[in-house]
Length: 220
Image (cartoon, rainbow, N blue to C red; front, side, top):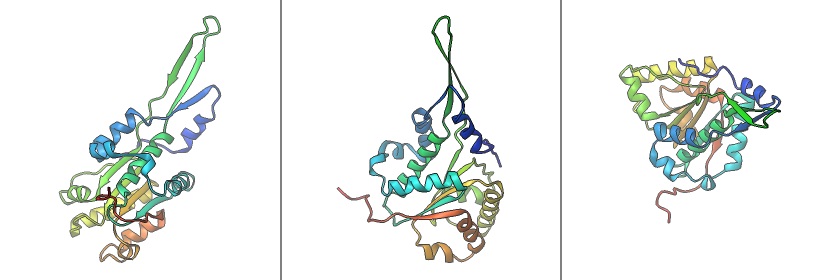
């Protein structure tokens, strides 16, 4: 599997360097990622102020960076989990920002800038689409952060499910970080027939966050 980032700590070290500032890459890079990976509809409709449990999400994101443990978002259909995953991707991209060093020429007082372009270390997969790839034996590459949206909607025939189990084991072995959204209840998530080893592994490497409320899709 492709790994384009060696570790979170190398970026944190740069953050503390002298004469260095950090500019968040939450503009064009975030827009490009959401439109190309999740969809233009989600970018156009994303409103950070409408995110439910924003404080808890921020706490979970901090915990993810500090402990290496991912997130499972449980909640009914329509409560905003897909927008939550857009918000989480935004925060991840902000954390992996461009280190910019400014140099001042003492003779001319001119300022020169040098920065390192960092790849966006996030892969997004809509679960039905991911399982279509697995079913046709198409290769699946992923980055440091792996977002799996709408867990439970996939058609999990045996071959695709066996490949998905291998993928989850590779995520575990490589210490990639998982973010999952699902409409399943915790009981349904845990007790799915044929998914025992997968869900056991995922529960080992992810913390749970429940998103309450009723569907916002038809609200005024």
